[in-house]
Length: 502
Image 1 (cartoon, rainbow, N blue to C red):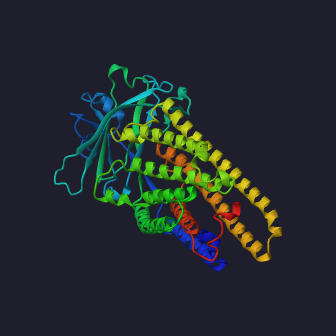
Image 2 (spheres, helix red, strand yellow):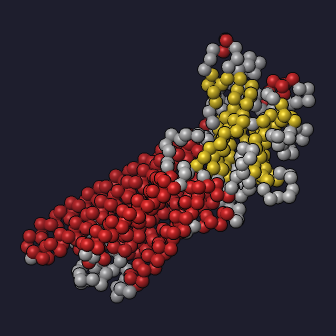
């Protein structure tokens, strides 16, 4: 039984190609022209409060405020145990929204040069942090505690002026603070206490100011993203059911390629299903982790499909249709994705219990995290190169088969040459899709590393157009393949399956 790719007329193929171009353009335009940038960063300066009860919420606007740390030092009632740095976000007059989806934050210390309180090289900064929330329609005026923890971070600061001149500020790197995967409340409050007992914070120097950076997803981008997934999901489900019906109607057992394509379609439906809508009514703090798992599963299935899709057009007939032939490649992909899952569980999985935890907190953890990102990027590039080699082998194999066309009749030769051109074009599209996926995977991981440190301008900026465009590319590619490789009852239904590589 032939597939639709072999039996579809040139006119219909051209119309299909034009339709795909229009759909992809719509995805890119929706991200580039309609949606705002994916994230927004807001900078806050912590207010210094003298608290009679540091364990109680200290609001920046109502607490016993001190203008600076020098005033705190001169206040006889102020001690390191009751000086609280208070940050309330968003800014006055604004409120957080459930459309914001997540909050990632970082802090940066302003450390003054002081001969009596010297900054030591790479000291450990210890802090006690409390996160509170308040709802807009809550009749109670009290803040409710969301999380509390005592954490340690390594400080990296540089002094640019001559210390002999006196004064000056150390330029400190951003420090990861907390991350929550749900913005279910309108107002948040952070209280930060720097304990001084048992030699804690002894060598960090004189803290003059605490700067806080809060990053959240833009509500406008979220609306476009939700709408896009809601529109795409019915099409992906309908195509999956249509493809399954076509394959089930065959008199033979489904081929390995058909089974793999069906599983890819199931995973695509799972990726598309807009479960994010529930976050507008239900507090779902696990959504960041769930999204990572869902997208990682799609990456794994897509990479396995490309290997099998290419291999099934490369191997001899006796070696086809057997999953064991690809156990090495599939095993490597599975192992890599398992490592990704373990890394994500160590970070975001633990943050469900303690949002102040961060694998970037220590120098060792930060190096391991960067090593992971670099290794993941290298593995993705190696995979793409391996896929390129397989595609080149397929083209070389097809070129060898063309030598037999000279003995065929003109009509038969033209038919087979047309099938080869169609298949070669599809392989080029597959390679392009793989390249864009690898690029998106690498730069999204680099961009997320920047989020951890609260950079307002990331080293690599992923625009809304890239987010929506890549998402549209994945779906149009999967749906188009399921359509073109569905069994056909057209004019060439008696032709051998995948004859382009036979």
